[in-house]
Image (tube, rainbow, N blue to C red; front, side, top):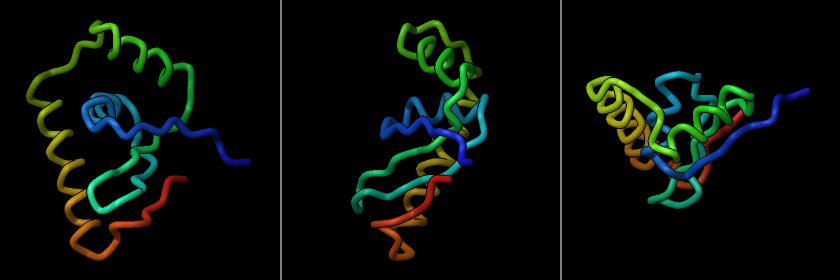
Length: 89
């Protein structure tokens, strides 16, 4: 049975989560919009809560690198004709 997924279209949140969690996939829902998928766990819920309450501490340099990686992945998917598609799972 597949684990439930936490999905977000907020790249800033996804970048912070990707520092702590494995990114399960990226779904392109339009040529300019992506959804990022992570396993839905207690840790995921805690990280999301800390992020939105401004309590999640991360290294600015590591955060910047994760953000850059996610943006690069989106651009790559879009330029390869995968502007609608991708996979979370």
